Image (cartoon, rainbow, N blue to C red):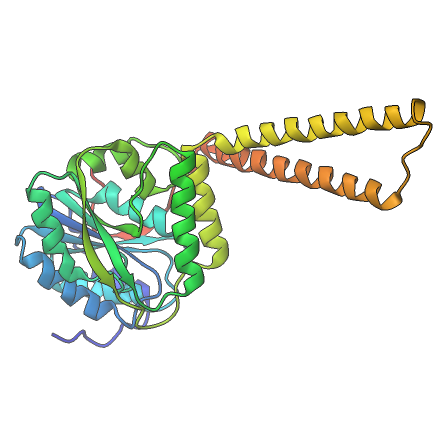
Length: 336
């Protein structure tokens, strides 16, 4: 079925969408899809998702979270919602980020099982019935594990593997390698996620931290069809910092140990300088060595301050306690 011609503006669509659909009953399965500038594939995404979940149950919901898209993604979502009473949308007032978009979907969903899947079709909707089948075997978390990642650079693959190995070393959580947020989680996992108030979300870490029975299903991740990823290098670094600072205080301990080590080396140099001057009658000279020493110690200090600053920044965000996101308009009611 073809979409009708796009409307001229969002206000026109909102005025035509007067009947708000509220959550009146529990669903067997909810699917949460964060959307950011996906107008070229959103129609294919909708039909593939619908076909996949209908293999599980007719009692489902598709919750699209528009994370400040600059294209016509929202107009398409509103049109789908008018034509299909299983489709819901949440429209943010601006771009708040992928993890926050998923969190909003978790706040509003009502399914006994909840699937999180990206909206770029790199994660195949056709895998959802297989995830659900594993869930019915008794697993509270069923994650999709990539056996192959098409279209991704060597740099991205190697840095991702390094990050998760480092995270495993410095924290007590065990996040399976080659997994993202594409997974199915039980309703009880959703309820516990809602109780976690931290502002810097790292959902895959939070879910792994909970424990429960978890298993994986392997799949081949497709390359992106249109556009480019919204995850720039800076966003990837911030995401990694969120994961580390949320689940480990070891960086702070490492800073302390480095400080003790540098102080010990400095003490030895002072002893050597005193012995050279008073016993060996030989003064230590050398402008180059002096500058190198100052730069080394200064670098250690800046790194230490930076690590401490990362933790303080996250404490500050939680103390301010601003809303995680602001909803401009939606066609569903937040579950209490």
